[in-house]
Length: 336
Image 1 (cartoon, rainbow, N blue to C red):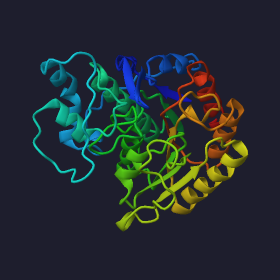
Image 2 (cartoon, helix red, strand yellow; image 1 turned 135 degrees about the vertical axis):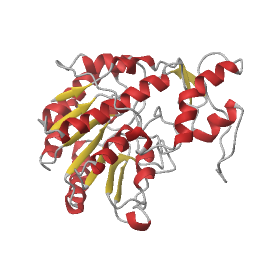
Image 3 (tube, one colour; image 1 turned 120 degrees about the vertical axis):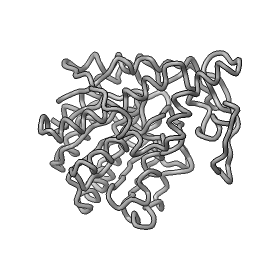
Image 4 (tube, rainbow, N blue to C red; image 1 turned 135 degrees about the horizontal axis):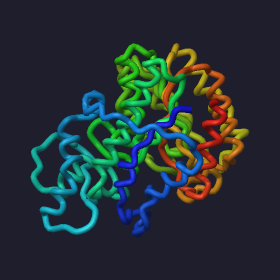
């Protein structure tokens, strides 16, 4: 399978995050890429296609903030990575903020997603991997392509970051595929955590379907999105499908939910599929609580492949570093 990857993605390297009231080493570390790269033989570097596809998803003011945030943090006399500490919970209106702390709160939604010196560069090239994957399929070069993205993207909304995510690679790929006439487009999110950013971006959009299988937000991050009654709104009513599952879920519980999501995608009439793939459903993932095995990853890929849709696999989470490469390889091998 064509795999698109850029070394620029190593440049995002925050030192720590605030999690459950304590500082911890940043879980979404560059070593994740090293593990995945060890399982892949051939890589293709992305071409730089600029910001048009990114701006089709993300607000320009947000992109300006993200590009400049770390520099502004240092100009304010701060050391280390930029981390917000004040977040509006109501009346989140557009204001002309000047202080970096206010900007971090206005555009972010958690304290677990630092902005480091190389964050913009890595996120930009992560998005370019997704863009290049869609272009390769549109050109007829391949039926499926794997965008080895880091940092991940599915928690990032049109104008906010969080959950280790800064640019929404899956949404960028989906919107570009639609603009190139490859649709109808569906996004299937199989990361342990709900892809709240992707859902928000397409919640009112009848042209892109979002289906997600994830940990029940009553018990797990991101808490405020991903409940079963969230099904889209306005013209997009019915094009969002959320299938939350309990902690401890094994393959015999996961497989029927995957079948339900794929059936919904078929009924939607999708002709192109973007898969937000997170290997954090693995039983020994340190920050997640499902119980899938490496063999189950392959079975997941086989079941998705039976839908027969061309598309892009976008890398999301997965934090058991010593097993990440083998889990990704198993999923891709199942897809064929």
